Figure 1 (cartoon, rainbow, N blue to C red):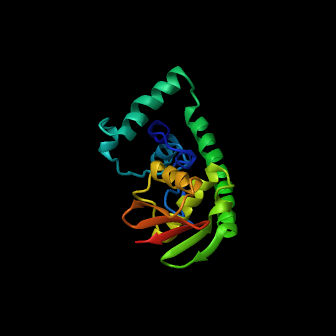
Figure 2 (figure 1 turned 90 degrees about the horizontal axis):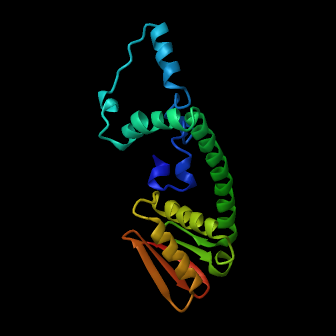
Figure 3 (figure 1 turned 45 degrees about the vertical axis):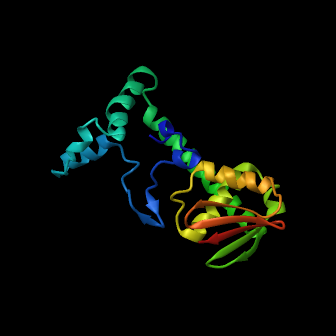
Length: 190
């Protein structure tokens, strides 16, 4: 579903079994057939959500129509293929997250609850992929979320930084302001 929606590599990871070291989807890697077989062998009567059979939702159309079509016509191992892609994306994202955190520490000038200041000159030297991740990292650090921040906002901030002329700012959403001034990037909670 994330591929169809145009998600980046973060979206290609799919659903993680754990979040904050707590299992939220402990059976995510177990094939449905194995779970159903286990239930039958152990006389378990699991609940069945009938809405999963209705093809009015995108996720169900993908599960009930698209995946079977791909299995029949293109790749009988599509689930394993997508699992490998998910694992690869997760590993690469974990690595890029570490680079982002290291870069943040190197560029950090000041950090408190209401403001983060980064070195603009050094920011402009890093790869665009890390710039995007760094902006997302800072906003999430300040607000606890990146809701309301889209790719266009990230690109606007990167463009603002590259065109460092005078005292310029953006307000990507009503909770944060990004100011470029005198070789520094200021992120303010508004």
